[in-house]
Structure formats: structure tokens, C-alpha cells
Length: 274
Length: 264
Image 1 (cartoon, rainbow over the protein chains, first blue to last red):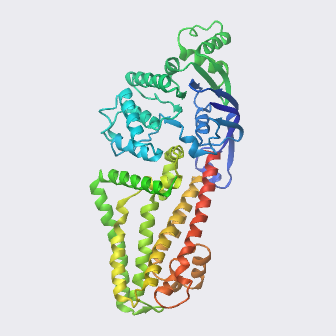
Image 2: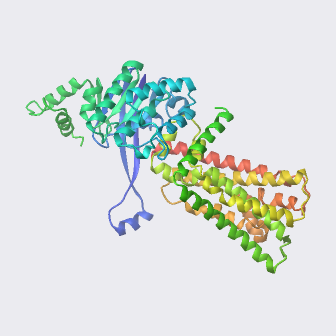
């Protein structure tokens, strides 16, 4: 269970005008902007839920994932994941979570995938028999047979993403955080990834939190959607709720019935969170 | 986690890194040869220097060779094990460090393990040659105390240099600016440390005792090893580098805490 309670987080970023003069000036005089990445965000997610966490770029999605996974500590508010504070009990906490970053690889570039997996086995100290079973299961579900002996650098993006997902699940985590797992994938790979996530959830009751810009991901996988924008929670409900909200904001909208992407774009525009 | 498990994981990392490097065989052999050549030139420089001199501030050719061998070994081991800290800013920028925080193991162990580079062992060959020459030319009686002293000096030096690498890496948590200034303390110390520190004068000797305690593994135990002083505590000085290492470790931990609150 995840309890995310009244969390705020802001960053200070250096700002300067363009050009050489301003660059020199900023050597001596720094100006800072404060960005409120998260503004009093609260939600609760129960075991076995599949939640889509959506919002435009810069809405605070990654900050949320980072706080949930213990990489970042918030300025205020409290967060408990299965009874633990993620950023305070790092080692115990990360044992039970798996994290997939669509834009970053966790596999070692120059060695065959299977060697990366074996290193992960050592890192998580997974008993050999358990590791074998798990590897067999993941290999079957994600069709990795032919990929395991290939060095990561020679895999296509879709192949690599399947291996990435397997790598995040070797230690059998109860929670899976996915930050844009389908980014840049072709249709076949996308569908394979979606099917796999659903299967994981059905068979292992894995809780899944997924950030994405691909509305078909949301439609296919999640039964609950949390919408954030400019660091604030704007909606928390089913996909149907999202459609209704769009409709009520724009009763005469032409697209609101047909295409989920348009619904979201309409919502962003109307709630002024672009 | 038990120490045994950590060593096992480190060896696993080392084997994975070595396998990766072996993918690029030519560059591996070039690197190991280049590093050997560089360090061998330093040895040659000492040899030429002593063509015209018999002593520098009371140190003979053999004395200097022993000192150089110890510093060279320490630094090479430190580079071998602590290489990850030297490339740490890149790890932070590429998000690799975030990934390490998602793994239930010591961060220091992961940073050290993920950049183990066998190619850095080149200078070790020079160090061994220097040591052999030094043993032949110096008049040290190799009893238990001498063997302990030279071993402790090498291990202490390794700890101190790794500590400095950790310190340098820790600055990445606070600033994205270049931190190569601290290279003066590592590379600078390596190249000047081949001579006993007292030949540089009192000021430098003080700096190297109270600010960055190089003398703990070099000057003081060396006096004992070369038979210039007999005080019982001199061979124990290298143990002091553990304290220095702990200080660096504390700075690192503070840096990690800061990183968590600021993000990358």
C-alpha cells in the first residue's frame, strides 16, 4: 500500500539571460527561480492496483516516481510505501520495488543480457533456484530466448525494453514503477509490453504505477488515472471519469467522445496547465 | 549485508567490467602499455638524477626508489579500486547514480565496482621493478617490522588516495562545476610523493601532515623503514589514514543526503 500524503517539492534552478554578457554576469550574480514541482499532492494506492499517472511534460510525474522510489526526499509531507519511508530506509525499501525508466538503461552495454541478469542476481542476493524459476517465467512471457546471449548494445529498442522490464522484475518486487515504458516503441513491442504488465498484475498481484504520454497505454492497462499538472493533482478516478470531466468542461466539444488524446489535450488547455 | 557477500559482489562487478573491457582488446593493451610507459619514464628520471648525485637531503638512491615504489603502488591500487569516483560526475549526469540508489547495496561499493578497470594495472609493473631495485640498493634489514611497515604504508596510501577520490566525487553532489582542482591533491601528490616529503621543506611537510595527511603513510613510517628513527609509533602511523578515510566517507554521506533533497 502506498500512502502519499500532502507532499510538496520545489527546486531552485539558476536562471540567466542569453548572450555572453549575461553569462559573465551570472558568474558573480546568480539569480534563481523556484519551481514547485509538487504542490500538496496526496493519494493512496492499494495493493494490486494499476494506476496511470498522467500529465503534461514538467507536471511533476518524474518527481513523484523519484520520491516513491526513494531517490528524492520531499520538502514536506509524508510518504509510506508498505509501511516504510522510501528515502529513509533505502536498502529495505528498494528490495520490494522495481523501476523501469523508458529513457535510461540499466543493462550493461557491452556484455550479453544474461550476464547483466546474473549481476543483478548477485546485487539482490536472489537464491539460485528462485532466480532460475523467475528467469524462466520472464523469458517465456517476454520472449527473451533469442536475446539473452546478445550484448545489450546490439538489441533494438523494443528488444531492449523487454529485457529492461525483465531486469526490473528479477527480484520479484511487489511494486512496479514505470516511467514511460513504451516511449519510442513500435506497435508490436508496445502491445507485448502492455500484455505483459497486465499478466504480471493478474498472476502476482503486482501493484503498477505507470507514467506515460501514450493514452492507449492508459486505456489498455490501467483502471485508475491520476492527472496532475503544474504540481497539482487535478483528477483521480477512472478513465470514464476523465471523459466525463472533459465533457463537462466543454459540453459542445466535437472530439471529446472519439479520441482520448483529444480529451486530454482539451483538459490540459481548459485547466490551463500547459 | 555481510562483508563476505560484499566482496563476492565486488568480484562479480570486477569480472563483468573486465569482460566489457575485453570487448575492446586493442584499446585495453594500448592503455596498459601506455600507463606502464608513463610510470617507467618517472623511474628513468630518478635513475638519471642519481647519475650526478649520491644523496638528496640524506636519502640515497635506494631510499628514494623504495619511497617511489610505495607511492606508485598505493596510487595504482587506489586508481584500480577507486576509478568509479574519478568518473563520478558522468555517472550522476547520466542518471546511473539514480539507478544505484534503487539497488539494495552500499552506494560506495556500487560506484567502486561499476568502473573496475584492469588496464590501470600497468604502473604496477614499474612499481614492482622499482621495489626490487630499491631492496637491492638500500640497506634495509628485512625483519618483521620492516615488512609490516612497507605493507602498512602501501595499504595506508591506497586508503588515503581512495579517500581523496571520494572527496572529489562528493563535490559533484553540491555543484556541477569542474572539480579538477582537487587533482592537484591526487596526481600532484603522486608525482611529488616519490621523494620523501621533507625534501620540499617545512611548510609543505606541515601541510602534508595537518591538512592532507600524506606523511602518515609516507614520511613518518619511511623514517623507521630506512632506519633514520627508531620510535615505536612510527610504523603505526599508516593506521591513521583510516581516520582520514572515515572523514571522507562522512562527507560522502552528507553529499548523498544533500543529493536526495535537491535532485540532479
